[in-house]
Image (tube, rainbow, N blue to C red; front, top):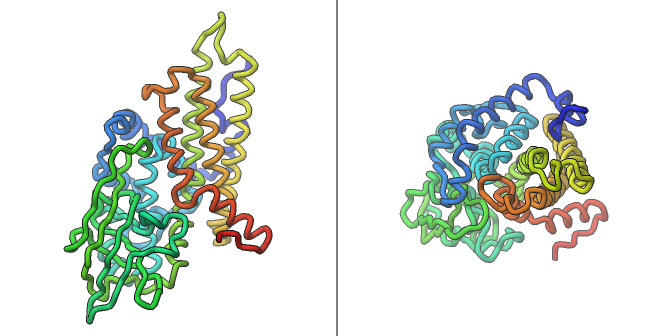
Length: 391
């Protein structure tokens, strides 16, 4: 009888990684196994997680902004960052979201578009997890169409005045700083570094979530918030700036969603090999093996695509449309894998004693945040035909 292999070992995909990449993955996995896995079901059930403690743990390991350079950031490769996201989301999507929003949205926006003063003031403490950031782009009435944002920034002498509301903002209730995007009086899209302690800034936690419950999510209300002129991101040039930040974060999702799928599949295989019905393990039935085979096939295909995109990124050749291909595929297939794994676990699949339905619930959010599947289909369609179909 052949010995059991894990889904990603079937094609010996580890052989495609360098020793350093495997070492980084192992370090992240050990941290997740000790710091997250024993507690995450309870965090999910309670609807809260120790975000600040986790941020410091992740910062100590160099995971926050790990693909950025300077200012205390690790300067790791895109593939290494992807592998880290893979391991983080294998534990929980909400935990990976903490790292993604901190590093690929808030820190990246400051690193890429900020002044030297803004970078020096915020990035070192964000890299260690002592300061937590969030990214204010989405609004209550403007999700997939950020170009229609209604948050306004007007110039008043030597100050900017911001007014508006941002919604579904990860980390907002615990954040020290927000990168806020707003339209100026001449309709230009501008970015601002906004300390959350600034008068007029209020963060309201969003409760009663059925997904990403181990993540802190909030609404940011900006009521005539006055900022110095130096708060504006000098390098941000229109809507392309926040969209480029989303591309950074979406790349992490390409890897991360597959981590959730891997955890579901490993759980289902283990369960099926030990659960007996009709006198033998359910893993010995043809229908169960067909499910496991099909899910493993899609997981491996997604992993190969993610690795290809990572290699492109490390060569400086990755394009936004290619990230859309990866995000669309990874999340769609991961969600289907989670649902199929739930069927293998039967009634036990709905229990928090197993991670499967928790992953499925989380992936329902990942499916629609940072670009819905429909938006990514349209991005791909635009590149295939040359015809935009967004309106």
